Image 1 (spheres, one colour):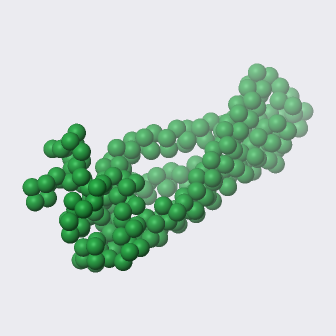
Image 2 (cartoon, helix red, strand yellow; image 1 turned 180 degrees about the vertical axis):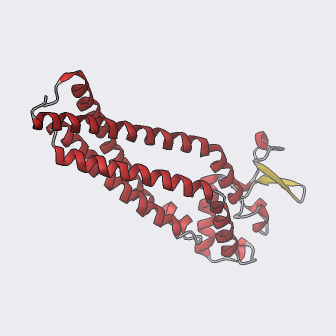
Image 3 (cartoon, one colour; image 1 turned 90 degrees about the horizontal axis):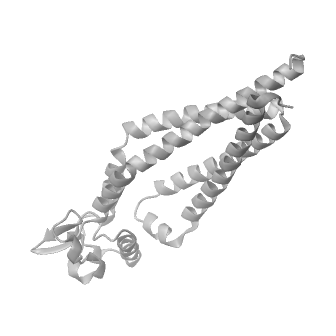
Length: 240
């Protein structure tokens, strides 16, 4: 058993940390499943955005892996099992390295997401007005507009008559702001592509802060596990 204040504290902190980790894994897995099965999202993904489902599969995989990691960490901390703690420490270290690599890749290609969405939406339109597209495609566009309170895929002029869409009307409070644009003397909500870009710009700092917090927690998890492993080695060798 872990002796001394340091060992007991590390054991307790590692258990609490991994309980949170395990619960987070359940949440991530459940969220990924919901994104994959939600009918409204399926309608939006039909707008030539199949890569979105690849992201949900990754999310579900990460959630499942996180649950396993949390279980290993909790059991390893409670039982002070060297095999579990060693496996946990190595896996958490690999996850930390992968997150750093993923963060670098995301930073390098941060502008490509906008390009991919632009190309996908432009391809869906094919140079036509939305009214000329199939009924399923129009339904998907209307769903997207409702979800993001926007007008048209790449511009309000994607509609032959933007005024026919109630969601396209620019609220009085947004007139003259970057939330609306003027088309033939009338202000309409900005396009869904522009709304998505604004959303990303407004939330990128939050996403980055959460990512840094998770990475910091993982470092502490590795430290606590190493302290317990060292204590277990001392006890095995008869030093403690």
